[in-house]
Image (cartoon, rainbow, N blue to C red; front, side):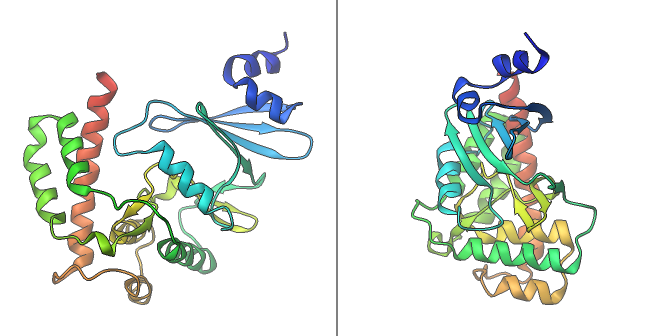
Length: 254
């Protein structure tokens, strides 16, 4: 057995092997918090195989696939090739690279326009229940984090579900690729109908938005009825990240 055939037999489901045969090369790209990623080459195309691990707190595999399927016409969404219980196979851009330290003006505009288009994209799903989500995280994290959970609950209890829309909910440099066609957003396992302010403050973290860029996003953001929603939501998201990290750490040792 060759080195490649050994990797194929031990790392790839038969359905992927049969779908792409013959596979010319296979490269392990790394592992995120739960999922492993492989780059696969055939004579005609490059693919990414994303192997599912344990579903992390707050993620929803079924919803992720529904979101990706409805976004297939968007140039900034990954192109699905094959969906399996074990993972997802994507068509890849051979020249795609991770987000650099800074984006050029064109790339910044592409990213902002992609997120605005996402928020406006019709998606027929129930709005996310953030109160239940926080309770779920807190149950995993343990009583040490009860005070943090209470702060989060106070921050979201007045949100109106009718203001929710389709959001990525995990925007950070590791989930942005630069391709020959522009930008591409990856890893949609937390996507849902939720509060678009979460994406907005994530973009603020990534890009240090200008006043004009903030105003552009604010055209699609709900009124939070507070003095400085950017600061309020930035603090709320930082707290949510802390609770999620505690929940994930606890889940990994259960």
